[in-house]
Image (cartoon, rainbow, N blue to C red; front, side, top):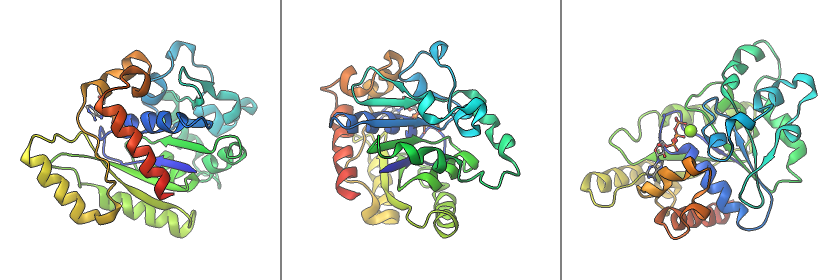
Length: 252
Ligand code: ATP
Ligand code: MG
C-alpha cells in the first residue's frame, strides 16, 4: 500500500499525520517507509539531524550519479520505520524535469522496486498541487486528505479532488481516495462542532471516524526527533493516531 498524504492547503496537519501514521504502521512490526516529498523537509527534520543528511529525494528523483531511493533511505529511532529524506533542493525538481516525458511518473518508477520490501509506504506531500504532489498521486494506491478543523477548512478541496480526478483518468486509474481526516479539532468549541458537521455533510462516509484533537504533545514531538508513540505514549495524540492507523488498514 502506498498512501499519499495531500492537501495543497498549508499547515493542515499533513506532516504530523504522515510521520505518526507511518510510525503507527511500523508498530505492527512490518517495514514501513516514510517518503518526504516536501522541500520544507519537515518529516525529515522530525527524525533526522539535517547536518547528517546526504543525498535526498532530489537526487533519487533525478537519478543523479546513479542515486536511487534505496541508496538514500535512512533508519529512524523507531523500529521498522525508515525514511527517504528531503531537503530544500527538491524545490528545483519541477524546473529540472520540464520537458521530460516521464516527469509525472518518476516517483512511481522509483518506488516500484521498493514495494516488495516495504508493505507500508507513506508519502508526505508539499502544500501545492504542482509536480511533486502529482507524482505522489500517480505513485499512490490510496490518498488521505487531512483537513484542519477551522473556518476555512473546505477551501481548496474542490481543486484537490479535480486534480485527483485528472490523475485517475490519465495516469493512475486505481488511485482511491481513502478518506478525509479531521485534524487539530477542539472538542470544547461549538464552532469546531459546526465545522465537523459541515465536513461530514460534504464528504459523508469518506470522513474517518477517528478525529485528531489539538494536542501540545503532537506539536512538541518533532523537536525531540520522535514520533508520538515513543515521545508521549499515553497522550491523546498517540491513541488517536493509532486508531487512525487501524481505520486506514480496515479501509484498504
Ligand atoms: P505544510 O503545509 O507547511 O507542510 P502541514 O500540512 O504538513 O504543513 P503540519 O506541519 O503537520 O501541517 O502542522 C502544522 C502545525 O500544526 C505544526 O506546527 C504542527 O506541529 C501543528 N499541529 C499539527 N497537528 C496538530 C494537533 N493535532 N494538535 C496541535 N498541533 C498540531
Ligand atoms: Mg508538511
